[in-house]
Image (cartoon, rainbow, N blue to C red):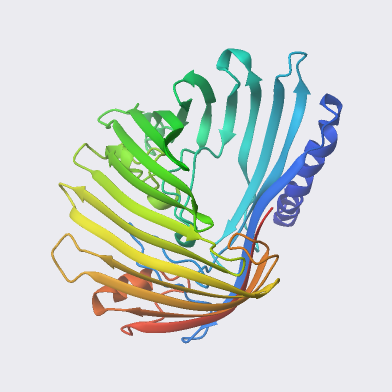
Length: 423
């Protein structure tokens, strides 16, 4: 197959998936499929010219995202009822693709399968719960302004969701196979080892504890399958308070050990998925955060975040990331907003050197579908200013998608336009 034909096939894949789900499965049910997804894209430049710069400390941190995303990302697909049993159990299939490019142009971004699973919903022996098998997104709430999924249980596996009959909350159990490959010796062609791990997730959610408040708990047990590899675990507790000035607040405490920290695992070292099974029990991660979104009036809204994360190991010592930020939004009209975002982060160094410090400020006039904080689509123009100390210079240059353009400088500015939507 020529490269031109290959590129054409990749570009046609989203359409093929859509046609397959909307037409090929139509015989199984009269119910219409639902198309959902997410898209962000934009372009900009910096005070150093060339591509837009994004200001980030890298490592164990996440960046403030408004006017500070230098990538392009799409995910989307169909969810459709495939069949329905006589007793009312609904069999639902989901198929999504995603595509990512670390730059302003999707270009040759490779579409990949993000979700492919089938659910059996409304099973009586699960007290109305759901059984499923396949590849899926799973229990991944996030802090929006940091794009931090503070827990992410995505993967390929199977399980049961929202099972009743176990007290005031709903129970979930799932088993996943992570890093499911073998390591092959390049010289002998023989299998050397495997990074694979079996991950079990236990979720107990929606436990009422106060008026408009509930608690979710998630426990992960990771069993390494390779030789001289390590098991791990994590435990997370989240308190969610609804109806707070028209919004909601989430307070979380999380602790992970070894591969349960998520370090060395999929994107962004997220807690929940299996990290590297080479990590022993000396490797730990503690995270405490509070995330508040308020909408006290139709026109005014704000998101706040305060977070502390400590990573510790015998080999690397201890490093702590602390961050504080806010994104106020005011709608001047139904479809025009003024947004700002300010965030400051500090990371201590294991060697006792000067802490890395970065502050980022963005102003973004925005066309929006509505006045609310979560109203999308949004079409934004932005100007972003970043300021960091000498200790952070290397980290800012290393994490900037346009390269180490700032040299020894300790500040920079980016301008650009961006769209963001979910549907």
